[in-house]
Amino acid sequence: MRSSMSRKGNSLDNGMMESFFGTLKTEMFYGFEKEFTSLETLKTAISEYINYYNTKRIKLTLKGLSPVQYRTQSLT
Image 1 (cartoon, rainbow, N blue to C red):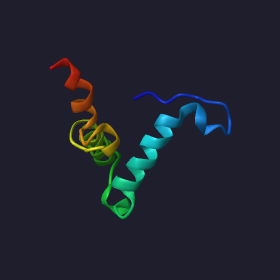
Image 2: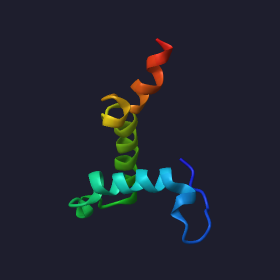
Image 3: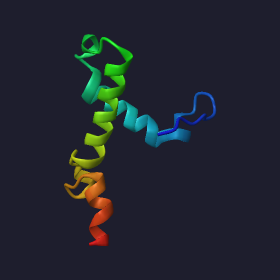
C-alpha cells in the first residue's frame, strides 16, 4: 500500500483507501486500543489484517467471495 496525497478536504480523490482504512479501524481497532503495546505489534497486526482482508474476508458485493477468489475465478 502507498499513501497518496489528494486535494485538501476532498476524500473522494482517495475513496477506496478511505473506505479500506475505515473498515480496518472498525473491524480491528475499536475495543483493542490497549492491546498494541509496541509499534512492532501494531505493524504485525495490520499486516495480518491486510492478508485476512484480501484472502479470507467474504464480501457480499463480490458474490460471497474474498477479493482474491473473485479476481482469480475467471482464470480457472
